[in-house]
Length: 306
Image (cartoon, rainbow, N blue to C red; front, side):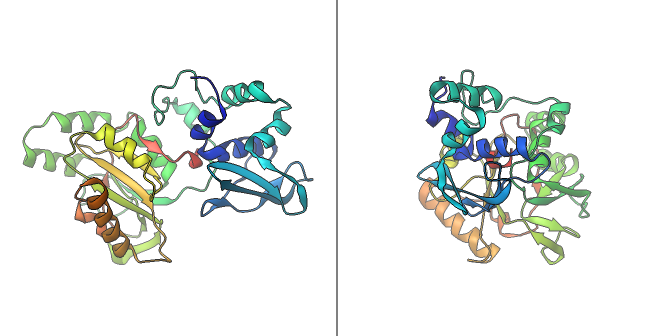
């Protein structure tokens, strides 16, 4: 696949990741972009004496920038990249593909990412501040969190081989009752809707702004994954195959300023029935819902976090 403006934008969250990549070169260790809705909060501009005047927004599917002190400094992400790399045209597109390891000439599936070594994972610098969740060790009756993890850390665990043995074992069990017992005893889990003192709605520390939609007994998981990633109403934060291999866990953002958690859940449940003809597992209405973590090498995470 040739590097084009469209293929690059598709791989870099409308170009936000390109801005972050360039800005990290100038400000290593800083959180260079922080989302506020679909826009980013003002950040340092290396082309304006490092003043915190750079404003990045997504406009018509492409990230664009302005400077609050210099009205002439404006353009899209490729204009910004031209300044950084001193290249233009196809040379610029090829350079972005190369230095950011987009692998556009290799990619066969738009959400599949190459597995990283343990050392490489440690070098990942997150573009955005990822939500924090509570992480629990098995068995499920253990309700005291082991620690708090970012969404990126959970993503790395799922796509690594940490949970591969128990996932393969579970999928080999044909008896439903035995499978449920095995899962409850052997799988670590997370509470994607927030961090907790204990796993109970009453023990919530901080809501993450995330909602888990649990879809079971699916016939075409691959086709549904692609549809959900393109859903016009909900942006996907994380998406992975359930431990059984027959369902999906869809993690989406919610705005608690608009409605409480349980009302959002009911609204999304109704939407899934109307738009996809699917019934959502009702356990998602609980803020402290436990979500078992499987092995899924093709787990998706919103690129804004990478």
